[in-house]
Amino acid sequence: MKNILYILYQPYKWLFFLFLVLNTLFFSMTAILISVFINQRVGGHCGTAWARLNSFFTPMLVNISGKENIKKNTSYIVVPNHQSHYDIFLIYGWLGMYIRWVMKKELRKVPGLGICCEKMGHVYIDRSNIQSAIESLNAVKNTLIDGSSTIMFPEGTRTATGELGPFKKGAFKLAFDLGLPLLPVTIMGTKDVLPAKTLNLFPGKVKMIVHEPVDINKYTTEELEKLMSDVRTIIEAPLKKN
Figure 1 (cartoon, one colour):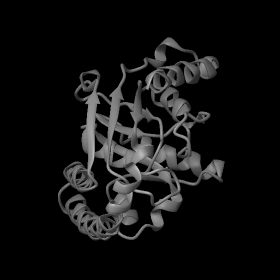
Figure 2 (cartoon, helix red, strand yellow):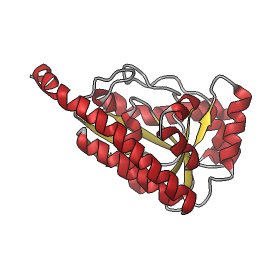
Figure 3 (tube, helix red, strand yellow):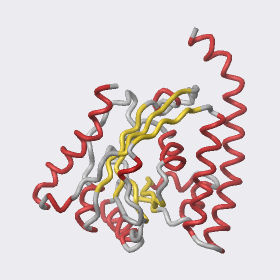
Figure 4 (tube, rainbow, N blue to C red):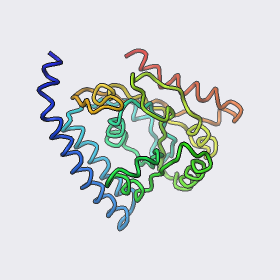
């Protein structure tokens, strides 16, 4: 039955991809204008509308829990697992935070979206150049105040299986640098909507769990590996139960 539904969905999928390209250009241009002439926070609402619109027409049904763990006017380093490009829709559309993304520099080349993210204050990072990456992260530090947070996928990239990959140290070092709490987030199901490195889009149900913040003041800089391990355990627990 699933194979039949998949075949029937294909014509709609390609129409949806066209719709996605067109509305991404529209929301990108709108967000740029708002960010330049009003402010970046207001421009960020375009991202929420964009994410929810495309999730609705996929369709992707979203269940979110734990939003009460996000304190108003508190800045965080948000650390979610990474299963699919659809993680971006989920986070933008339902997390309800003003976020400055730290993203790989290759995304700067995406028409419309690349320049939009730049104008909205998001940061591109060259993962192949450590010094350049450090400079990029330094650029975002002074903006993380009054509830403005940043998000980094600690795995660095999507995994083909949806299993949690090894963590990189960047997000955790940044948390120590800035003295900000880490906000672990578990994403489930997006790999079944759009698996990594494919265009095999399919409707589905997804879930996002916002865990309690992790206070880095309970760790010393020498306990970086322990901090990474503890956060990984928090994020991974619901994945193991699923």
